[in-house]
Length: 372
Image 1 (cartoon, rainbow, N blue to C red):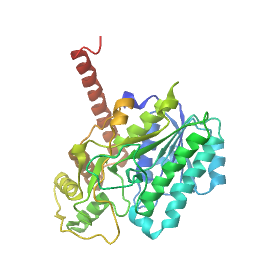
Image 2 (tube, one colour):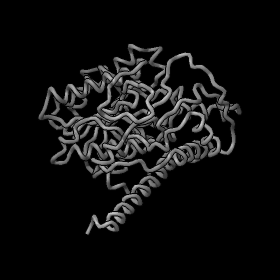
Image 3 (tube, rainbow, N blue to C red):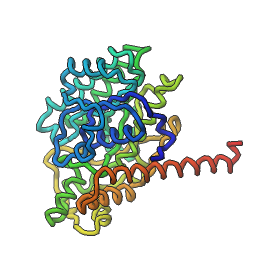
Image 4 (cartoon, rainbow, N blue to C red):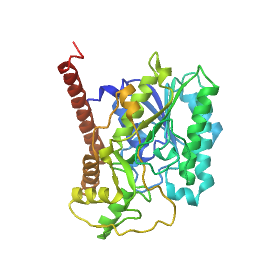
């Protein structure tokens, strides 16, 4: 597999991924293994059936540690035993609506779990770089028309969003309080979709269930606007950021970063649903307005210009490509395709898109005289 040059060199690096049994964690772990990294994962067992983690056979391909990030002693012991060079912290309770039912568990996992991780890496002299993944929902959402930048106020209405804001505050505090150690950054992504996510209350999961039941996809909040992006987009950002943290001047990148799509990919739930139906080839959408019983953000956008300017990171696939690839991934799986082959195909296509964009940028630079 040819990798986008921007994500760095991972062959032989010892990398700990927390939350590796989840949707994003499974994609990330598989990608790192394909790059030749020595990967350990720390997480609870997958909580969906099916689960991408199981379909990819990851338990047999990496050091699989099944444990809770709320267990500070176990987490510290596992970090000390594995001695990773890089830690990518994705473990979380990731669902807004579930956070209303389980607010304490959400805060314990997302905030205290993050603090436990920060303390574990601080105690391990092998760790050089740590990226803590939070969420675009960590901002105090004022329903602005423009994207939130990294220095905007943190907050959150619901227990999930507020817990992610609090996790960001913890990261910033540890970075300021304990300088000279691990290089610590946080990453905030948009609404991530792609093949292999069966989590509850997600639009793609609802779409697949509707297709299987022969029913129209009924939308909770059709007019809500979100920054949709394929799962490989933010993952490439996390890897790029981690790689930069390892460079000689990597301390300059130890701060908060947004990895969101362009404005053109910020669209409504209803429009995304229509794109999924069009890509699958069958199905229907019921976009009659349904007032959600629980508060959910109406308009949310990220400004990722800092990542573009300083990391050279940009999204590669727009919302149409993202929805098309997602729907076709699930359709192919239902028709008997192998999940690992489908993930590898998306990785190869994403790598090719990134390489083409890099070549185009070099050509443009030469054309306007900025390169020799």
